[in-house]
Length: 329
Ligand code: SAM
Image: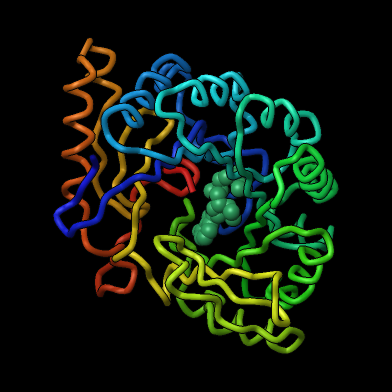
């Protein structure tokens, strides 16, 4: 089991499959992109599956979420999902994606064993999409969303990040769109994880502001708090339900006390928090021939030292040295 010294147990593993992305969302990375990880630095499929087998077989991981970067860019993704689904005990398998390429991949991923999907959608306007993501791909994202739902990955979840003066006026429209299509929408407060270090607290659209904007058009009723568990989103019934909307107040309403997550980067580093300032290297011992017991013990130690909170609101907070795309959002 992956326990830390504050009594939390990590059961939810976020795996970054690549740091590359085909969008350049300004809250994540600069228009010119980043110095991507060189190929040999990344875990091979076999190395990744070996670590996943240790995670589910020895360490109590029950959910594996593939992310990035853009996980649909990882060659062999369908095979990785199938091999993960064959592990014992079989974990729940989910994917966070920008949706580009799902028209081709949603069905095969579903057939390979993918259980759930989150698609990121921040705007319904082509012009705003291009301004925010620096690529003209909104139509591909919307087509990918439909493909996910048609392939049986329903209910499709949608993640949206609002940026002041860019898309913050779209909160009610995004919710109406998701209600119309049967998607479950969750807004995420913008976090200081962009590679350019451009995050400013005063520019962040807060959970309070998001709820206020939605309340202009919808009646929101807080959902049963006991059902929230370790879920990061606060859930609200929309117009009496059954539809819901979530708000993830990572900065203004942190939920670190209930955190059950641990992360594995594309180059085989364990991170016990998105904002951790240290990583634990599993790739080097793995390649040097360490056995499963040794790797499991290193992983346990990496989680044991997890801090009680992410520290964003502490004086002197420093962003982690690696950006969101490398850590895996
Ligand atoms: N490329 C995939 C995608 O677009 O969903 C997966 C990786 S992306 C880093 C995962 C999620 O993190 C997306 O929903 C994205 O909007 C969100 N994200 C990225 N940078 C963020 C930031 N600085 N603050 C909050 N959420 C962020």
